Image (tube, rainbow, N blue to C red):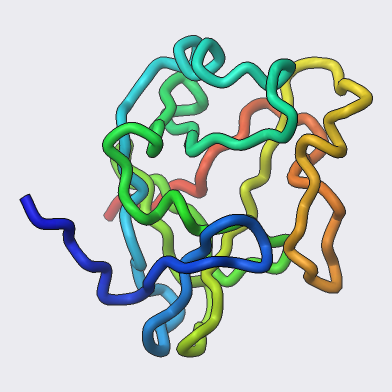
Length: 164
């Protein structure tokens, strides 16, 4: 089966982190750029697969859905949505719609611009001394917080799309 080409972005090397998604053309605010796909796994399986304590630097292709009970692991059967990097000044956001995640443009995006959204990682455990390094942010935005972590809250999840 041939790989589908995304009409909005291509993947190439990024100054932020590894590979990134770059707009092929101007993208209008509100455009659904891509669905985030991969293997659906329970949260405890995600914890088993990706042990933060054992990693030198946090790196997964996980996305929590369904109030954190289920994760999409884009490292398995995932698409190019997994290459959209984090930024503290994003131009996209994840939207959960009926148990699926879509990445939508929050503002007009210029051709050649890197697509990013705020990962909004939160941790349920006590902070370890090395987490600021493991979760460091490389976005370079003027408002960069320096890391991908936000203050702990109930559960991190995508914005839910209103059903009409």
